[in-house]
Length: 416
Image 1 (spheres, rainbow, N blue to C red):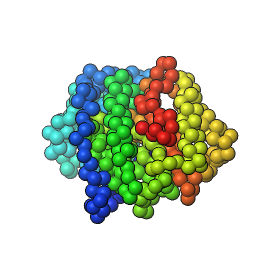
Image 2 (cartoon, rainbow, N blue to C red; image 1 turned 45 degrees about the vertical axis):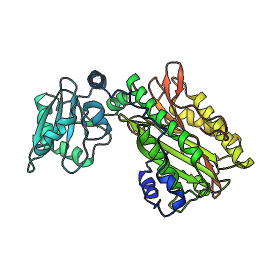
Image 3 (cartoon, rainbow, N blue to C red; image 1 turned 45 degrees about the horizontal axis):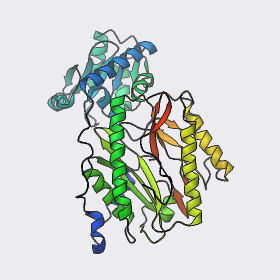
Image 4 (cartoon, helix red, strand yellow; image 1 turned 90 degrees about the vertical axis):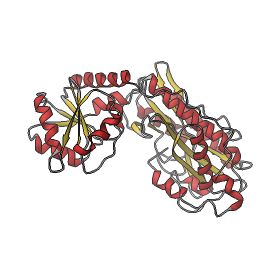
């Protein structure tokens, strides 16, 4: 997956599927042969969450940070288990360098917030006519943390930051990236196992869906079939993007109608969530026989994936992986850099609880690869007004180097 394309996918999925009676099976495929692959997966447990907070506190000490402010989202779930939406009413957590966390939430929301709270924490509530950031400030003063730098998780909204500044005008607010990224970028074996389960579901869904793609189906038909298979296999579909022919030259496609024809290039980019962790896999194939031109580009992308995988070594910078792929493509006449025909986006992105996480495999990224980091590997090639090819498989870094979550296909004739 290149960017957040959920709105585009949702728009495509909303196209009517029942106006083509002969293709009703695309919307309602026979899933009886599929079984849930996730029955043995274990959610993140209390011991692992406690270890996350301990690691965060160690990183706070190492970076001179007294506490970290986190709003609802993946980081809040990661550290506290609290699953909550963002609104104008602030719910947030404060992780102190020592001791239990604080959760601040509206008074009437406390029972609901506690339902998913998975770590020992103090909960302080605020009424509708009160300022929740004053509760945060009071907690920091009580712990004598108001004189230390306060880390702000990178997705916290401005109104919360501004409110904390007003409540603690002398506080020094800094980025919490050394703490939050320092924890979340390095996946544990439990996290790796959940990502593997999600990938296994997506690959199984591809194996079900690709042979059932028929002439006359739309991208929405194919995507609906992929999502249905994913659900039956135990995953929660996150996206099922399907691009046909010229649309495949646009990494995130188009809202224009797309219909599979004999000889069509079909690009699928799909992923799901299992126990809060995501997969992201792309496949490109031809309905029928591939032309020499399509086959050549497909082979070039497969070679690009191999180049990226070979360049992903412990201690190498994330940017050097992208550089290696781009150099190999430019030697074949693509580009240069982001120009088309060629690779118009980064080689890959981090992945975990979110489909896109820091850091990216992109030119200039100096973060060094380390065990536990997880990335997509998707160096697509796009030929405007003709077609595009994207193969995407994710890998995680081990002490011995990268390891695939899903093995790339060997040939356009056997895409799954």
